[in-house]
Length: 432
Image (cartoon, rainbow, N blue to C red):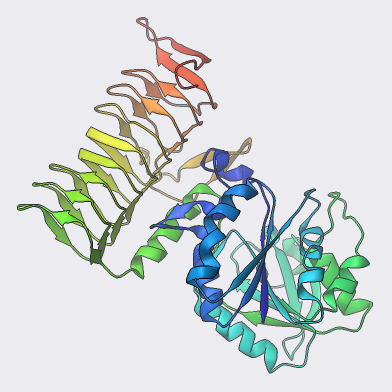
C-alpha cells in the first residue's frame, strides 16, 4: 500500500521554532517529528511514500534524501505551490496513487505506530471507500465532529458544532485510508467560506453525491498528538522518551551518576559530578557538566554544552550552550542559542494558575500549570537575565544582562534594561 503525508505548511503557531525549519523537521529525542511517522509506516508495510511539501521543502528533501538506501521504501515529492486547503494538498497525490488504495496522514501528527497496522487491517476487511480515524475530545465545538450510524459508518461531518446540537465528541484525528475514488470527490469540491478546498467537504461529496461509504474508527486507546502548539511538543517528547531504551555510546566520567533509561550519543562526555535522571536523550558530541543536574524528560541535541546548570522536561536543540548556573524548566530552547551565566527560565506562577502563551496574536490557555519559555534560534542572553513563564523570544534576538523579560520579544531584537530600569527595544545588529 502507498501512503501520503501532507507536509507543506508553515507552522505559524509554532514560531519561532519553525522560523528556521519546517514543522515536520522539529527534532524530538534525536529524530525529526515526521521521521517517527515514516518509520511507523514502514513497519506497517508501506513501501512507497509521497511527501507533499512546500515551506522549506529543500530541508525535508535533504534530510530524507538517503532514506531509500537505508530503509525499504521509495519516497516521492510534490510541491504544493499554493496553500489552498487540505483537499487541494491531497489532490497533488492523484498521479502518485493512480488506482491504488492509500493511507493519508498530516505531517504534524505524532501517534502510536501500532495505529497504522490496525487501520490498514480494518480498511482491508471493511466494505467501504474510505476509513477515517476518530479521537474523543473534551471540547467538541473546537473540532470537526463526525457522526456515525449504528454500524460505524460516517453519516455527517460538522465543523465546530454548537454545543446545543449534542453531536457527540468524536473528532477527525487526521489519519485516513481511501480508494482512489476520493480524487473524483476532490475534483467536485468547491472553496469553503475560508477560501480553501476542505478535505472534509470532499468526504461529504463522496458520501452524499457518489454513494460512497466511509468507516469511522476510534483510536482513543492509542497515543495521538496533533502538534500545533509549543507545549504539545513537550508532551510528544515525554511520550517518545517513555518508550525509549537507554544506550551509552559516549563516556561517563567517574563520580557522575545516571539512572533510568538514558540515551547518550557518540563522543558525548558526561563530566564528574553530573547527575542525570532518566528518561532523557543526549545527542552526540555534547559536553555535559561538570556538576550538571539533568532531570527527567529532557532532550538535548548534538554539539551542546550543558554546564553547572539544571534542566528538566525541556527540549534543547543542537549547537546550544547552557553553560553556567542556568535553570531551564518545561521550556524549548532552539538551535544555536547561548544563555549567559545565571540566566533563568521561569516555569510557574505564584498563584499556580495555568500558563497562557501568545500564539499568532491570540492569548491561549496552555492548560499547563508549569510551562517555561520558548527561545528562538540564534538568540542569546546576557548574565543574570530572567525570562518569565510563557514568554516567547524570537529568533536572532539578544537579551541584555540583568534584564527581566515579562513580554514576548519579536525576532531580530536587542532587548535590555538601561541604568534607570527602562526597557529598551531596538533592532539587533549583533547577530547578522
